[in-house]
Length: 303
Length: 307
Image (cartoon, rainbow over all chains, first blue to last red; front, side, top):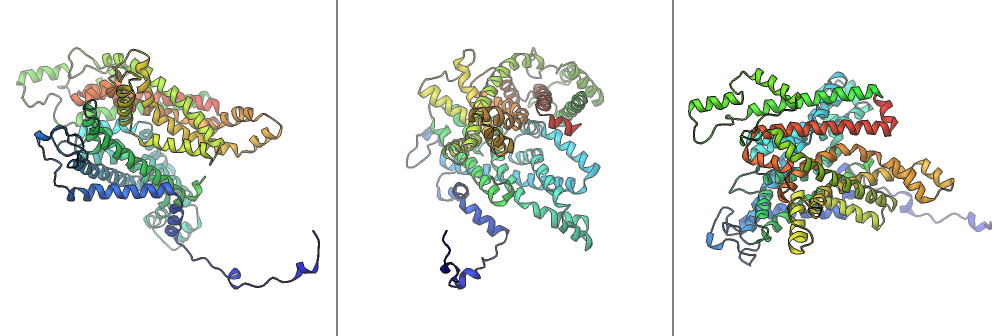
């Protein structure tokens, strides 16, 4: 490199390069910017919103009712009048898929909400109280965790009997263990940090520290876990319906429709096709969204 | 080592005991007796039946005899089928399920591990994206839908495989693919993330630096270390195969324990449901125990940390 006087001349001063301040972003704005970068997550979000609108508003625009039978029209292949065809009692499959979506989505959201509440409180208490209490509470979780959730849910459903409310109960009380473990792990590290000490110093009570300071700080992992639990709940519900423990006729979830369709698969394959597509699409979208959210909300987990 | 084994053994027995107690309590929480029917039975008949199944004794006696029988691996008679006991059903169905499950597990490991390893080696390239997209699809398709689609397209439409039944090798292919699909996808994901982690380690750099062939580094150093999280997944994998077998055996008409279990749910055959549940739980807890032992044998760090 040649040294000459030119190198030592001062550069022209530009106003904006010296004092450019980025707007300050809060946690959610920052997460949203990162989430937007993942095309798959956004696609998942759009599909979920679309399926939600389809299920909850769709039936309003249709003449047929989900329980309306018409034996003259049984097993009609898809036509303009019945875009998804009709089933063995002549019921319109399109409107049944919409109603099924209501039930399946409701089960998904409600079950993961119950899980969230139980898991967060349980995990939070266990992590914050620590010591012997923590040990006992975690032993219980370990025992529950070592058994397949589906087996527990089946057993509970056999005892409670089929029905929508019982599905909420059975799903809600049996698979919060994953959430509890994650929250506990987060709380264990958070409670040693300075802001907890500061809160203790200004005289905050234990429950104030736990619910106002510690748990809100674990919101990222909580949301990510809950997002992954929604497709799980939808899967469990359709699985239960498939083995005859789900909602009963004339109500139908996607699982019931799929299981009806399987019985007639040789002659009328379209009956299984539509509910199956909706189940898979919904689960796929939630998984895409969950992956995106994990990267956006929990930077430490990013690859 | 022996202290670790004893520790795990004790906790295994405690778990089995708790499971058995809970199932017993649940069974007695079922509203109405197992013989409550629409058409009421005559008083004397009901009494005789209850005597046969020991339902007239106090609860604590029933509980003790249930636990005692369980220790002898005797789960009692079926409520629905007079000539059958729960043990008969397990004896009939379990070998079939175990064979199918074993094939599925081997399939899952032999496809999932290489897929994950390849994804990690070509991180963020098209190979990686392909594996990751397939694994996301794999975890998103419920087993009963995959089973139906395979049966319809490969079995009925293209006529490549027999669509249902049990007995020949060709009949094993579709159900084992269905059972393995979710575990393949899941194993590929854990294998990928642990392999990515391992490939960053210094000992991999050292292995390359001292001039080893890259195939040697990958197989001997990277895969061997990255495989550890997959081994911890073996317990849940076995559970996933069990529960998957409920619907897969039902759809493909395979006379395995899963099919009998679902049939007993349809029939509300309570003793069979409870007996098979307890059996599954014991088996699973035992498998977890074996996996723990294998794991601590392979990875000494675990053994030291736990004892």
